[in-house]
Image (cartoon, rainbow, N blue to C red):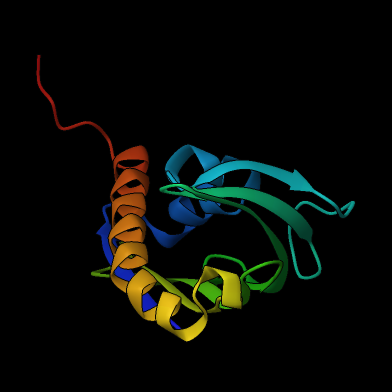
Length: 151
């Protein structure tokens, strides 16, 4: 089971980061591997929210079925994967400095079916998923931080 953890520091408070991340619909805007999200529950946030996420990693396309398992405003969003790929994931937000910055950590523990290589596929996928998710966090950071460009 690949156990992957990536993190970044964002120059925004946990409240500001959470205000964006809590909107699950917008995850496709910063997750390069997430193509489309469709809610299958009436709720769009909080524990029990269910959605399907069309995911593409290289030539592999699948629908990831997820349920939100934990939801602590400005602190944590946990998810259970129950589709082709199974496992658990969590985003955690921790205040840095005087609370004006945030450490955003993404942890996933996933299991692959035999036709995606099972345990061997998981070992091969770990560095690939780590790299994709690190890039996703870079995209999230750019999305949330003000431009430092000057004219």
